[in-house]
Length: 262
Image 1 (cartoon, rainbow, N blue to C red):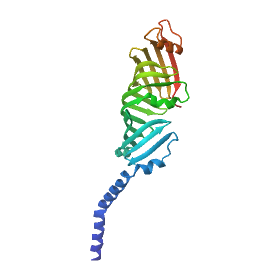
Image 2 (tube, rainbow, N blue to C red):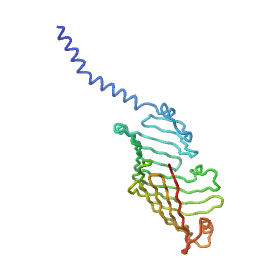
Image 3 (cartoon, rainbow, N blue to C red):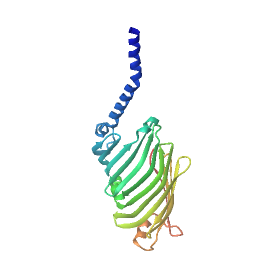
Image 4 (tube, rainbow, N blue to C red):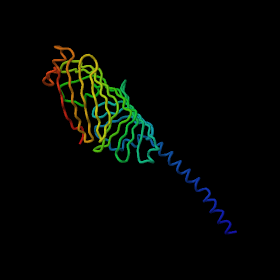
């Protein structure tokens, strides 16, 4: 009798251990996915340039009512994390930002190796909202920037690749004097060896501009542009003349190189 009792008790525990573990895992998963976002985000060490208010939802699916970065108002931010990628050592989420008519949407994946991937990125931005980036400069501007980038990726000091089209429209200098410039289309394509190349072309009937740009994995940004005002003797020609001397064809050639990151 003692032996039979021992065996039956042991059999009961072994037969139900899977149920106990399953219930425990599900309960733990339920707790994790329902952690309020306002419990976690405030304890993160965000840069001082980032300001956020009114956090709602959970860590997995939440919303920030308003976010500012370096004085730029990004509006509301929504995210939906995809937990399955955590098993692969990555974080992936659908992210959207919106403010009035402006918006940015993208699927973002961050791997443990430091690689950042973006898919189906779309945006519409009022360039005037980026004015804080040139605080202290003696000019202001206006215009809209829109774009669609099916696939882009970035890994600092290793590779960078942007694929898509950026459109700048209704470009205008507000001060020190008001002057319209028209628009600009920039098509970008990821090349080999961590290089992104692009072709740019003016749109509209104000500025005739063509050129090429490149961005390499070390953050070297090179732009080569040829431009001229379509209307001779107009105010736009006087403005662009300050950019440099004209060549034999009456065009201004600009070649610049910038370091975007170190």
